[in-house]
Image 1: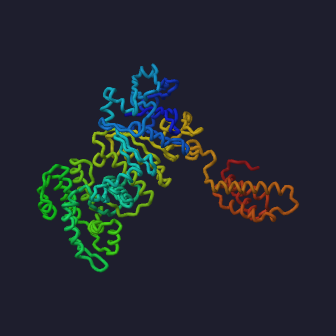
Image 2: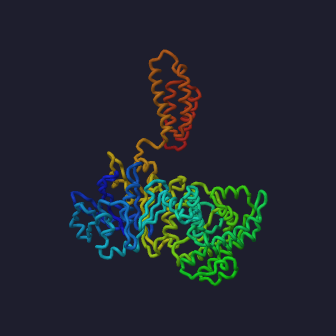
Image 3: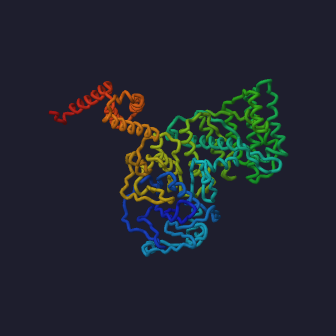
Length: 627
């Protein structure tokens, strides 16, 4: 599905009667005037190519509040509304959307298409609430939309726009994951009345746990050479428990109690010291107890739960996928390191925090550390999990946690790319394996990156998609404040927004050449920084010096007293600021103004020395005649 054009009639936002053209495979630009939609005649031209599977790139830039994120909101809410014939939308869309060769327009809006559009094969259809509701009237369109095109949305901001829940959307925004991660974590607590009450601490722990698990899996499945920093050497392995597992609650909770109650035998007055073989045995029992829920999902008849958990060989009678998984797990923990020494006070605090001693006991048992030198064993477990979950649907049976304090930039890198990896990779995504095309919306994706990484961010994304998903195609939509990203694209890829009298408008860019442009020029043009590129605090200090020196120069012209002596403290403050200025041009101009007020021999000597060096340099070039 190729988005070519959108015209928005929305009186509730700053996007009012706004038409936006997107880069697409065809030629010409759409425009809507007086009820007629037409396309400009434009000769075909060579496009900047990003890769064979990158069909289009659109970068939306402009002032704060110009409507960059709002534009993405409208597109996602209008188009990501149908999955396999099931439709759901959050907001009614009013306007026009051009997808492939179809022009979809809302009821009540007059839209006639030009003869030129009819001639090149465009067809129009009216819809009531959502553009996708009209697809049933379009030949072959249902199949294209339902089975091949999906949407991905990323934002690291915490605001209401991040909580999209639409049929054709994989939402990997921080806002959405923060609320949804509790559903598949170890931190769900189901009380007797069956009503879930999410503790805020549980929610944050669940989000962090799943975030670290995604990062670990991304690291294990990536080429280390493509990650721009040193990776973790050890990871922690945990089972993924859930309150939905009936084998962890009544009437089977006596088995769980039996597994963990033996821990109390090793309690001393202030510590708990567990034998390593004991921990590994208990982990093997816990993994079998936890995986019993898969029997229900596989519709397998009742088994002897006790024998399955405690007998070392009984599990071998299980389906092949379960046997393979348990074997891979047991082999991994057999060679793992174990932390077996704990403070009793720490465990009591854990039990108090979670209101349940089981969490403290789980903590003592689930301290299995895997050296990534044994990464082949971890990958074997990942493969076994994949085989099992392919039969039961999207599910996470175990959790991996890295044991490294990443910098904020490193964490942001892993967070973004691991989420993108999970959204596209069928084994992790709840989207179907036959999805061929993805529309990816990235809202300020390089937020938190060092400038050196901001320069590489766009290239990293393109390389990741080409290397890891060569058989899928992508349309990319960025909102950005980064001049580096804009310097990586061509004029056709750029959408410039401005805000005028409370409404968004599209700026002309025909003479604009962003590709490979100087970032200072881009800051001025794409982000409207006409007032310079230094911080406002420094700018204020420099303006103070200019104002005060100009005032003293005027005073000195008519004064019959020593102005420099009278205003020595003010001059001292000005000189203190001048000495700190890094830009040599600005600094030298201010020194000239300063010397007009005061005769400072040291400054004069320094200026003479600077000018002499400049003269010597020019003489050395031999290009000038100084006679």
